[in-house]
Length: 223
Image 1 (cartoon, helix red, strand yellow):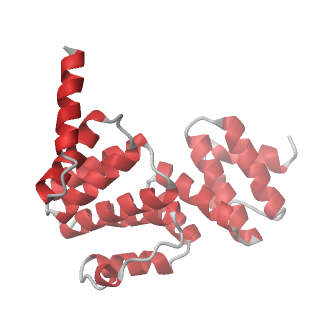
Image 2: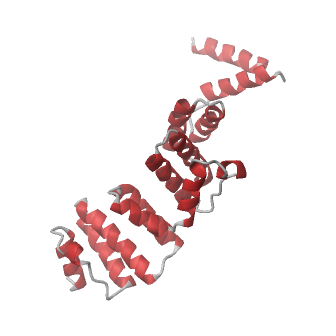
Image 3: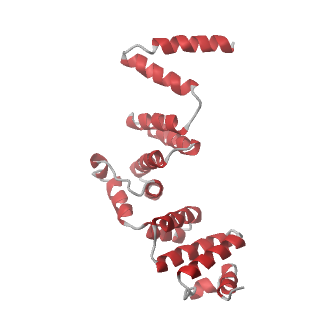
């Protein structure tokens, strides 16, 4: 049975070698059907679905591509198109989050002129592009999106921050780790925060927190 399927596929692929557009489309579909799944092929399919106006299908396929794995440039492209889909559906928060993910994957990302001029998502992207990664991370933290906030703080640290912002980024990462009962990581982030700013003190509301307040005081005291 398997041999028969392979022979049939081979014959179809040979026919698909013809130069007509329907045959080229058939060839591409066969390749995607019988080749091992990978993020790149799923991305190409998702982008074709998007261009054809199949936005719900495109969103599912693009998400699958991301789960299968993409390089940074392709990841940014997938998140960008997911942002377009969410913005067009008036899901601005999800749109912003996808643009943040796109910029985290490729901080140099720019929209094409036709994309940038779109009245819905153009201003959303422009506002996020103008904001610093550190500010985006703080906004995510304040909104309670702690997992994404942690990724954004780490991205901001990789790009480089001044001492005060670096200390604040590590402090917030410590909060996130402590809240998740990862005390070792929490202590390590507090140490990094104090290395960046030895005079660092928690705000009164932060210092009174029952989980990370005592940990910070212990680290500050060298214990």
